[in-house]
Length: 287
Image 1 (cartoon, rainbow, N blue to C red):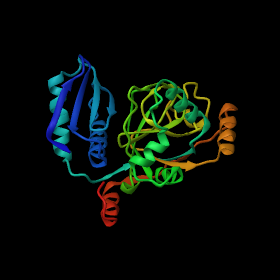
Image 2: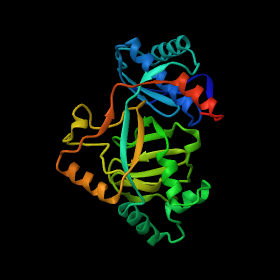
Image 3: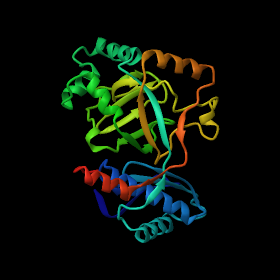
Image 4: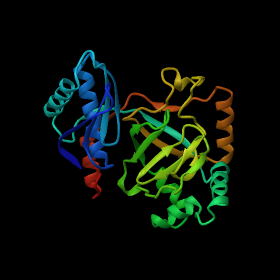
């Protein structure tokens, strides 16, 4: 839900947090991205970086060139001119990622956690129960049956927060309590209403359903998709998950190790939120 007005919070002496609303819905996040685009277009010289988040954005700036008060007034004026209506279009690449559902590595991770917490149900089975799905095959079909909106990046280089664009494909889940001490690189997880792909071996708390062998972060920039950035995904991209077998997953692992793997990225697309919301409405659902 959008706030009546923007809310500003200082982040030390070089950053400001701009909060637009409270929630994790697509329309709120799209408005965040529209404001990010409008601020960038305004070309305020003192701004050094803009980081879109789920319901807010962070602006890093040079306090020697603009004061906190002047910056917040400028952002508020841009937002007022832009308007809070959810409409318009943004460039949006479509990235297709392979996923091997219920693979050996994520299964081993869950089993390792259950050695300490034996009451923890296996993640896929818990998700099936909580979301009214008959079995793991139905879980995989629902997860791979939609495009996902890259709402934000953060917490770890390349880590993405993904919102399903088809409302009927939503999967919800509680997070681990306590979190895991490790998660396989490339693990695909669900937490709350969000999906993510773990860019590296890290602690984590999302329920695990499979592994993506195509990296989304490459600190060495060996692969072609990382020539311009260490992270594959950008806020405002869309992600599609393509189910693969264990054999194809192993082949992709080998191609990545050899430096030959080429990601499936469609660069030229534009996302129209007006047409998307009309589509959702036509299907009798809510974004």
